[in-house]
Length: 353
Image (cartoon, rainbow, N blue to C red; front, side):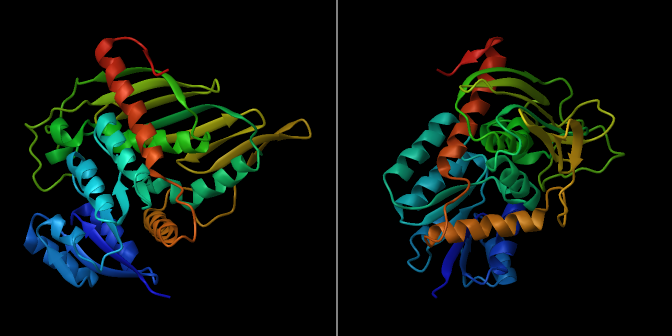
């Protein structure tokens, strides 16, 4: 069988996750890496055994040896590179969010619908074994109809800086960076229902918290504590056409006693916590019963998640499977995120029907 030949656009930290998974996948041949810093592109290409390095992604997209690309650039170029890749005849895996705005996301969807290419969005947490185990319980109707979910991701000591702190580049703060992960997990587990209304709030009270130097945090290479145009905190109540609702909050900076993550769903026959660790609750013989699936890890596994995501992208591109994170899912998540910002700015609930 011929191998799936891949190029990666972007050579930063998230690209390393893609490249690691590609390099370990026996179905894949790494052809090229593109980055605006050619020296970095060449270094990364050498590290992972790619044949070529480009400073201009257009050269990578014009490379006839490449079948599919991962787009691992800043948020402000996701849409333009995804559309260019589709038009170049490549299969596409684009990192989340699929775009900064709904208008950009819908432009990608239009390109998808006009092509026969696989376009997948990088919702890597869907691919973690704990999520897939819970999804199998839900798909088998063990929890019944899911009518309520909670999605929370709280950090305490500030944003990573650089482009993460620049709204023009990122499109937003923790909502588009970390909140999107937990929102998507709940929406995916709920069966991807149609959103009908959103009531959201955003807050900019604490800034970058660059004054806090006694706790470690991830910082980008160009971190500057004086640069920050994104929110500290966002929260929302999201209602769906089937009557279900979702409660979301996420923060880079909050006076909380600890960092935390909570992803949980509740149905008529049972409920489950996915993060921080998978637990399932149900009833048996008129008793409440807690279930702990015996799997290698009941929390998100980064390496396994990316390996599974890349395998799903490769299999979908080769016609061997369906993508579990198609482009339209990315569009719908951006629709919700944009409505949260709109609701917060307007100070009222936003109807989407």
